[in-house]
Image 1: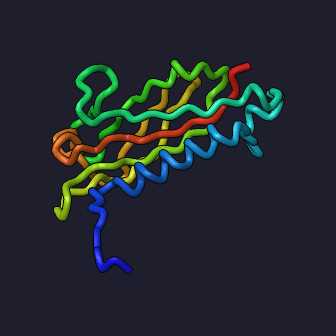
Image 2: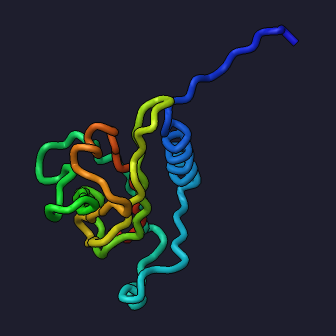
Length: 153
């Protein structure tokens, strides 16, 4: 033992980022994607395994265009973000997993839970579960990390 004690400082959300990066690396390195189930309306859609594609990305909190954090209406909790996945080239809506990362080191500012309420092969919307405002989402730096798996042929 050298007696050296080094700590690796992790910012909030870094564990999530590392997990997502390692998960994506595992998929890429294994070169196999196996989809066990698809939504009910896709059951007749049979594609060979080589047509499966995993695509991922990060929708940044500070986007100020059509794809940034927006409000559905005047009340709290009506906050959503539209995320563009057209570049993935899916023929039908993919299976999507999304989570938020943000907040401040040691602070009490957190990003709320989200759910996917609208999705297609080119985009999806996430909406906050808890009451939130666009201002809070920007101040808390709530970025959306997503992974989608679907078929391109």
